[in-house]
Image 1 (cartoon, rainbow, N blue to C red):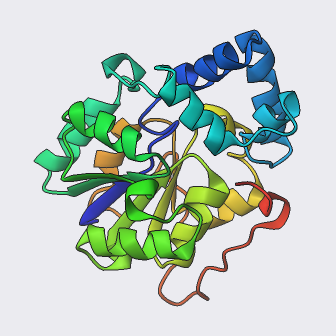
Image 2: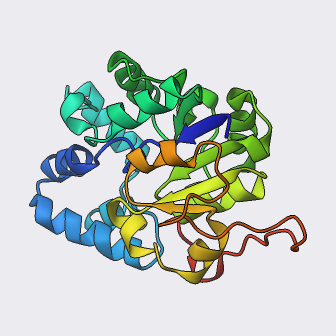
Length: 241
């Protein structure tokens, strides 16, 4: 692997603060919103559908702007990072791997992430690119940012339909991270098992994948050169966004 590209939410950054801030804005207990997010995840729906259950007529983007105008917009600091982020990214760069952070997020999220000075060669969000996952154009931009051939690029994320399936369809290698609601709930789904080149429980496992087609352990089996090309199936996960 020459380049490793990482998702943002529930890959690098915990979403606790994000959902707690929405619960506070809507005036509901965090547990209530958290339970609704879990229900949406289990049904293969958008996590933001949890907000629409509470406020059926809610325009999420409009509400986001209202929060920002009221001084209650996005915030990220070191405490929002998973503990393995800095060690893992630092080890990858020390091993000579290009590290790119590219995931769905606002322009503000991109600014906040870059302010954390992560050990990464590039940090960019979907709103900065003007296209969101799972749109194939997003992964075309990832391929450009990678600076390596698709087969030498590994995309890492927790979300099957936003991360795993479209990255594989773009010809990249993929690592599914068992982290966050989507990562845990869908980890053992047959389509995830079939599609992922690797299945990991922590970002610190990534350095062991560099230069190895299959390091063993949690890595998914890799197809040999003589086998049919991998077919990216969605099945019951088709609606996961």
